[in-house]
Length: 335
Ligand code: BTN
Image (cartoon, rainbow, N blue to C red):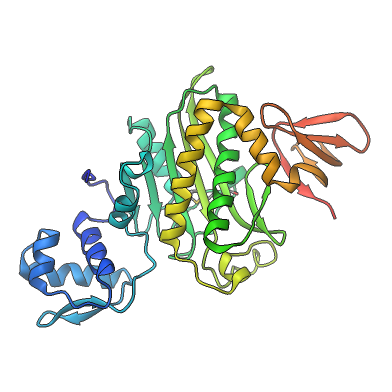
């Protein structure tokens, strides 16, 4: 398994190995001697790593004399388990896990500038400055949502980058549906909605030359187990838990999301824009026949969505005016 060089703030390799060992053997008491052997520390140091985990909120039972165990598998995006499940895949090659960081997109962008190869995935249990679209922030409460960024180096023109945002939306919708049975609505270009409220979003950031992309970071946030949101978001945000009444095992959701995205990404690289545009129109009711208001920042108008252009841009048939291609801006449904 590739070893992750320690980057400031990433989860320590020994801590991650301890978490994986306890999770894979949940309910079974594991002796200090075995833990020491498997995670590569001295027996006398085992308690220190157990204490570290406890400080991070993992309920490790047991004590030095008897050994340690977990009562159930914790809902943590345990990087070692993830790497095992994604073995052999592009997105399982290098997984960086943070218990807490400012923004996984910020880190992935920095790695991109430092020459990090394609496929690296950055995960966090909590973000203190999660970034949303249009300079907004992304509510990133500890251990409840999925906060993940993927670094890619596709050979694309910068104008094609939005197709990757749409592709990630398609993959996220499929992953959510396969795990929970809930069909989220895909709102162009990057929103996942359930009953009209925001379930997830995608923020693509990139570094490009005028004609070619150097690297792209696809940041995906999905509200999984939030029970409630801050008052200002309560009317507009929802989670899988709120809609289904059930807890979602985030690690499983993440595995499905990454596997789905990787397979969609490969098809996109070989087939190009038509794959994304066709799929998006198939799985998004929003793309055609919806009454919308478009706010471009300089102009606001109402109309009806009329499908996507071959480049993946939304077409809106204006109430007063021609068929218009939305290049950027906020599109809201008017009911
Ligand atoms: C949106 O506004 O709809 C996009 C939200 C994107 C949030 C994700 S969470 C993981 C990644 N890191 C960030 O700072 N933002 C994205």
